[in-house]
Image (cartoon, rainbow, N blue to C red; front, side, top):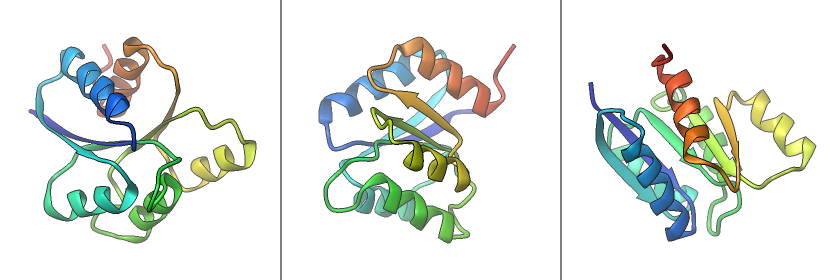
Length: 127
């Protein structure tokens, strides 16, 4: 089964690195969609099947927290796992992410092995 991913970050370099890590993960990849902010990500989710979202928190127009809240409030997409990739260290923000059901958190900078480990765990691919 091929997995579709959405990578949401205002940095094209980070989006490219995440996409590369996913490609190198050994998973069967369908599509890797990209969005530069939360609003664009919600548009992608309206039009495409996505198995997992990787999102930054600090972005222009609509940040990751607003996007996550919109996803939680929308029954059509509230079950899609969201993994936050961020340098955020604010304890209140981290508690909020946990309270709304964010599936995982990867600190920037990150190693590809960490991303693969999180993806494998969330998609049930652990050996």
